Amino acid sequence: VAFSSGLTAGAFVWGVLVDIIGRRWAFNFTCLFAGAFGLALGGCNSYTAFLVVTAFNGFGAGGNIPIDTTICLEFIPQSKRFLLALLSIFQPLGVTITVAIAYGFIPRYSCEPNFTADNPLPSCNQADPGEPCCTRDSNMGWRYTLFTLGAISLGIFGLRFFMFNFQESPKYLVYRGQDDKAIAVLEHIAKVNKRPCGVTKADFEALTGEEDSQTSATQLIGAGATQKKASLTDKVMIELARYRLLFNGWQMAYLTILVWLTYIMDFWGFTLAGTFLPRIVALKNSQLNLSLEYTYRTYFAIYTPGLVGVVLGSMMYAIPTFGRKIAMTVSSGLMGVSIFIFSVVNGQASNVGLNFMEYFFQSMFNAVLYGWTPEVFPAPIRGTACGVASFWGRLFGIIAPLTAQQLLPSTRDAEVSDYQKVLYLAGGITLGCVLTTAILPNHVLGKQSM
Image 1 (tube, one colour):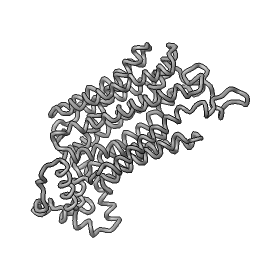
Image 2: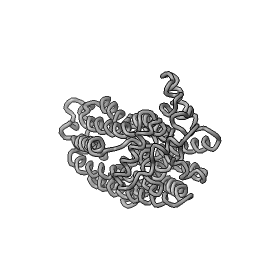
Image 3: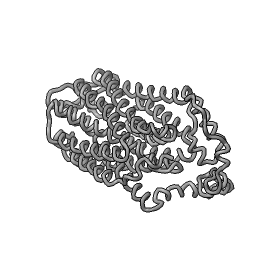
Image 4: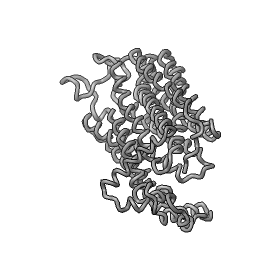
C-alpha cells in the first residue's frame, strides 16, 4: 500500500509537472527519486521507516512511465511509433533482473525455516525472550537485493543526467512560445541523425492568429502574450484549465472516461497479481515439497517471457487501425482467464505455466496501453492526460490490496485455499478491460501525435 500510494502521488504530480517545468527535468528527477530512496530501503531498521521510504521510492517510479512514453512519442518519427509499445520491454527486463538478483541473495542469506514453511522463524523483534528468532545478520538477503537494485537505479540516473545529452521536447517548447529553442533542438536532432533540418524561424513567423505561439490567447503559459502578462493566480487557473480539455466535447470525454476505466481495472488486476501471486506460488510449491530456491528459479521462468509479450504487443501495435485495439482486448481477456484457472489448480507445471501466461499477456497489454495513451491526446495536455490516467490506476492499486486483505483471515497466516477469493477478485476486474478496450472508438487511434 505504501508503494502504491507513492506511485499514485508520483503519477499525478509528475504527470502535471511535465507539462509545466518541461520534459527534461521531470525525465531525470523521477529516476533520481527512485534510485536514491531505493538504495535507502536496504538500510531501514524499522517497519515504519521502510514504509515511508517505500512511498518515496514509488513517488519517483510512479511518474517515470507516463513521462517516458510522452517523451518518446514527441521525438520519434511517425513511422517508428511501434517503439512506444516496445519501450515497455524494460519493465519485464527489470523484473527479470530483479528476480535474478533476488535468486542470488535471498535463498542464501535468509533465515531457516523461511516464510513458506509451516513454522517460520519469527523476527527477533516479535519473539519471546529465549525463543529462537530470525536475526538481522542471518536475514540480509533482502537488504543485499535492495542495495543492488538501488545502486543500479542511481547508475542509470547518472548515465541519463551526465552522459546522455537529452534535449527538451520541441513540442513542449513550441507550446511555451519558445520558438528559437525549439528550432535549436530540431537542428541538434537533425545533426545527430546526419540529416538536414527543414524547419526555420521563418516557418514560425509565417504563422498568424491563433496558430501563432506569440499572439494566441488560448495556449498554455508562455505560449501567448496574454498569459505572459497574467498574475500568478491567473497562470495557475490557466494551467488547471487544461483538465477541461480532457472533456472538450463528447468524443474527448468518451475517450477520457474509457481510458480511465481501463487504467483502473488494469492496475487493480496486476497490482493484486504482483502482490499476491509470488507468495501464492511459494506456498503452493511448499505444499509440493519444493524449496525456496526452486521457487525463485520458477519466478525467473515466469517473468522472462514477458519480454516476448512486449515484442508481440509492439508487432500488433504496428498494424494500422485495429491492431492496438485487438491486442489490448485479447491480451486482457487471456490475462484474466489465466488468473481464474490458477486459482483452482496446483501442480508443478501449472504453477509455472499459468503464471507465465498471466505475466506474458499482462506485459503485452501494458506495452500497447502505455504506448497508445499519449498518442491519442493533444500535445499541450499529453503529460497531464497520461499522468491523470496513471493516477486513477495507481489509486485503485492502493484500494485493491486493502480490499483483498479483507478476504483473508486475520487470526492466522493465510493458506493457499484462503487466496482463492483474492484471485477471483483480480481475474474478474481484469476482464473488465476486455469491454472498455473493445468499445474504444477506432477513428481516434493514432491520430493525435501532434
